[in-house]
Image 1 (cartoon, helix red, strand yellow):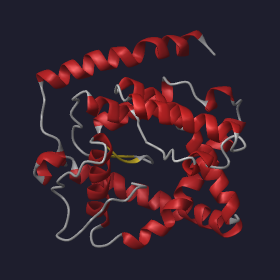
Image 2 (cartoon, rainbow, N blue to C red):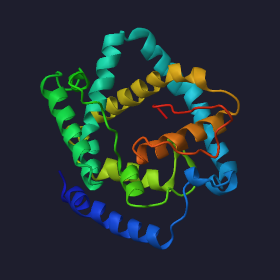
Image 3 (tube, rainbow, N blue to C red):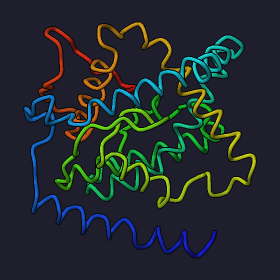
Image 4 (cartoon, rainbow, N blue to C red):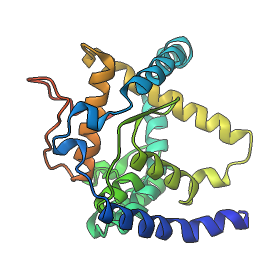
Length: 255
């Protein structure tokens, strides 16, 4: 592992926490779940919709057909094993961010899940931890920033990455670049093959959720994403969503 990566891992997380938490204290704003108008929570809607259309084009003409083919040729037990394997890798992220959020129980669960699934689940192919009453508790650095009071900022649609916000994008970059992971030990080009399989597997798992989409797809996904993020940051406590349609419950786990 190169020295620059070690330096980033040893300094970036505490530096970001100090700078961003201090900034949020000085310039705190309410999040979208606290009743902001559409214009306040999504001030870049015009640009976001353009990026959304680009992502839709790339998805419809490439990623979705590949994912559909993957679902067609992959037996269910193999698909489940692949999903379990990649999910198990995220337990390192869950553990680190649980510690940063001072959530001792969640940290123990993440460590236990990784140990059980890696040792007894054939390297993570079988989710034995859930059978031992250790369900996954997703935690990422975006949630860590939210826990320490950092405002989410405006809703953003990122090219290829989809729904996000400044806080969540910072969290994604930190989790990817700073935390040690399985990917550090995979050589090129195999790492790219593995990443591609991960993306295709995730997209394939989302295909059944497409039946829930209705009305303006952009608004629906925005609402589902914001609800899901606030739900995670608040550890399952109910939140009000300014974008939800009357009677809608958009708590979709995969958004």
